Image 1 (cartoon, helix red, strand yellow):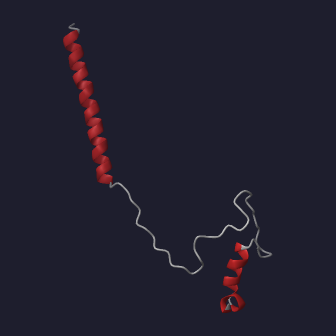
Image 2: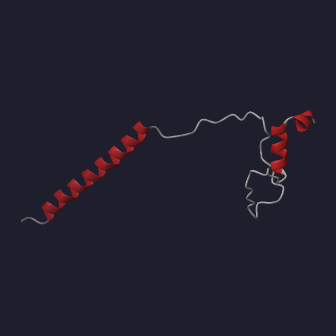
Image 3: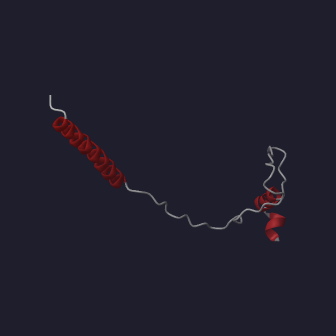
Length: 88
């Protein structure tokens, strides 16, 4: 209650949740999302950020190298088989 009475930032957050904007702001309403759609977090709540999951560069390089080497090996084998089938 004290925050709403004395803290302008808290009052502004709750006013924006209700659809109000100040005179120096431009307000854009997106139709179809609902009138009173609430945020999932409250102002001032600490959110723990999860570490992103990724594939290391070394693994991607090894996969690319093995793929390229296997394609090259297949091309060499098919060329050798072609030479044995069709002698000059």
